[in-house]
Amino acid sequence: MRETIETLKTRRSCRAYQPRQVEEGLLQQVLEAGLYAPSAGGRQGVLFAVCQDRALNTLLGKIKRANAKPRMAKNGNYVSREQPSIADDPHLTDAFYGAPTVVTCFAPKGFLFAAEDCAMAAENLMLAADAQGVGSCYIGQGWAAFADPYGQEILAQWAIPGDHYAVCQVLL
Image (cartoon, rainbow, N blue to C red):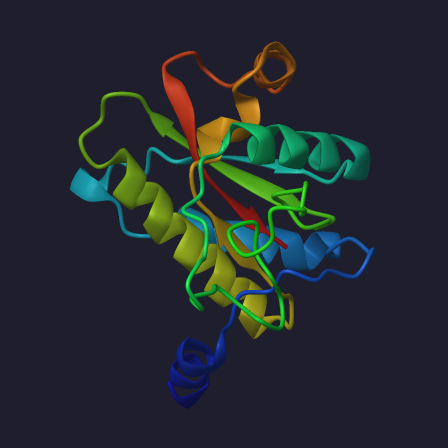
């Protein structure tokens, strides 16, 4: 129990990533933790799409940045001075900050608690990652990464059902 509480107290978002991928065994443990997240009505309706293609992640991160409408930091407010976010620095063009692994959480369109289910799954992913020594960051407005024709092609390649939408991404 002490280790769990310590993880809860010390986990922080990471916006600076090493180029190496998360080891497959660790990634599977992180994903399994996400699958066991609480969900409304016990639906367990969140789908994960894991992308470890650096060029594709960078391109989707740029599409997301171009289509996202973040509330920009101003008047001395900021998200992070040590690790600026796209809300802090308009010159950042990759909303995924060069993360080697990006997990997109998809949920059914029109389901009342789709966003909440994805947020719970994302939290489990991030806590499990931290417990394994892997940095992570939650990125909202997941649909913005797929808001152009190329993004739509990627969804088709990934076989994401048309009745689902991207709620968020978790960077690892």
